[in-house]
Length: 389
Image 1 (spheres, helix red, strand yellow):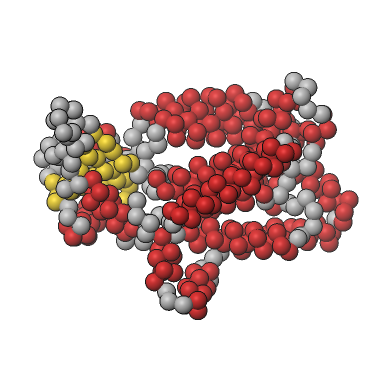
Image 2 (cartoon, one colour):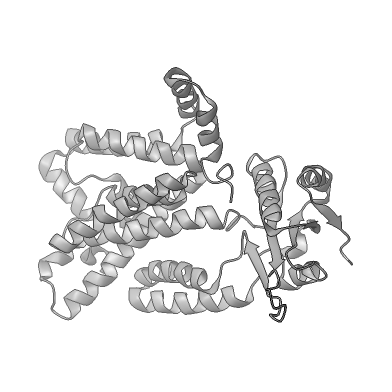
């Protein structure tokens, strides 16, 4: 997809159009003035830590850290609140360098993704990574591979969420050359410490980074995933079909439509590009249809999402590994048969009759928005196609 639509693409385009350091700084300052969630979260973390120092002292801090740690002892007692409160409690005092780094990291993520995506990546990864570490430690303790003191080890702080946000940013930035450098870098920063020490903290950082990379990939390749809230029977949206001469033209047109959706100029519930193979030199190879989905998860995507939610629910029930396995299998099965937006039958019907090398763009959108979409797509080379055609 075009870099303009990728998360942060608008900001990157505006920075590229600015001439000189002063102009670029003004663009960044204007964008930073709209930050809300990142500074609020950092202020909450700092406020909690300063409040503990002021009213509880060192001994009180140790007790608060122990009560809010996502360790085996707490989670086995179903103290589920620790999965959330641990993200606001620091093991030590406030360190200015770490606070500034956290503010810059979460602020950059909010600029690129928006508040909702920042909250999802940070908080969900913190919870899921904590549950994964708990499952690993519990197995190790049950088989005698780990010392029993590990069950009460302190496990609080912002590092799980921060590692996930950094990895997701590296994978979702709109500049490909930057992604090629940053993705290996964030992996090395967690793989090397884990290979050297193999502590549960380094394991948590590794798992958080891997989850963050998956989240960043999802942001780039499934831009509408998770946004459909209304049941199909309650939707007034109708499929619209546009035929293009090449698959690249259809994909470029999809970028324009997604950009309108991101600016909230239209409502878009789903979009699919379908195209067929260009016949080979011999002409004997059968055509094969391809699809570019913006919403539906594949079986592997569903298994990963189901495993993540399964281990969280399993942790609450006291069976984290069983919950992960059941969640992965169930979600993979559902993903294999369920269409969240446009059904396979609608896409297949729209693709019939499209010549080899051509493509069709199918949009699930409000009838009120279709004239605006038609005007945009006609300039991009799209030809409207009758639903029955």
